[in-house]
Amino acid sequence: MTEFEAAVFKWIADKCGDSAIEAQLRSVNVSSREHTGIGCYSELAVPEDAQPTEAEYGPGRPLYGPSFESPALKYGGDSLLWFEGGVAKTLEVFTYDDEFPTDHAALGEVVLREYNV
Image: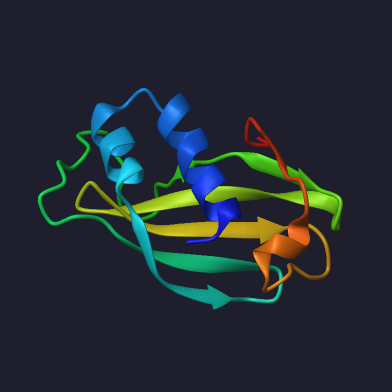
């Protein structure tokens, strides 16, 4: 897990108000990452005994994570957390710029804030 991903998970856990999601994200690991050019999909590994959320997250219904600003990105980006069976499955991160760095450290000092809706 990169520092950027860890910061996004912490931000969501701190703000979501759902104890099941908070617990999942405090023990989550990234099992794989696919870069798309303008972002990435980080597949998540949550402990098997994690309590699923009872919120109505499911196919086509993500939890909106933080928007972010970075000195490496002119327009910043956004994040979505996708679930399967009430368990965090995928973190989707995308930018409004032409390219998202494959090395998250290249983002520099990132500022997280409420999602751009």
